[in-house]
Structure formats: structure tokens, C-alpha cells
Length: 94
Ligand SMILES: [Zn+2]
Image (cartoon, rainbow, N blue to C red; front, side):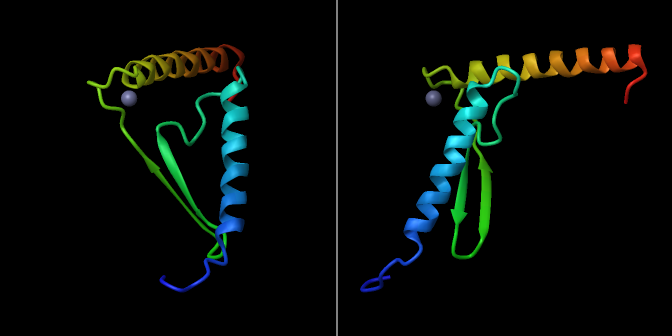
């Protein structure tokens, strides 16, 4: 890499900013669940047209509260899915 000009950084940074903006908008929408990048990272190579998503598990001992928040969010998502299943069973919708 020494002496080489990274020709794709601007494209990858722009793509990453767009994805980050989408994740933030999704996070702010009360009708949406947690965004796909929640507790994870997305690596984007604009030149190679590849993306890689990696999940990270919050550490229970961390005082930031992410592990507790994740547990509450998972419980809320499960309750929402169960309610939708019950509603589907009542209406006969798939
Ligand atoms: Zn933490």
C-alpha cells in the first residue's frame, strides 16, 4: 500500500455514509424494527462491489446497557411477531 493512492476511498466512504443514513432513518421510524446494522458492522468495498455484514454481541458486563437493551428489544420483537401471528390466524391472512 505504501506509495499507492487509494483510488476507491471516496466512493466507499460515500456509500458507507448513505448506508449509515439509511440505518439512522430506520432507527428513528417507530414502525420499523431494529436496523440490520444493529450491534454489527457493514464493510463496503465500492470498487469491488462487495459488502460484508458482521454481527457483534454486546458484552453483558459493559455499563453502556447495550446487552440489556438488546434483550428488551428481542423480547419486544418476539411479542410483536406473536401478535402479528395471532392477528393473521384470526383473519386467515398468511
Ligand atoms: Zn457497551
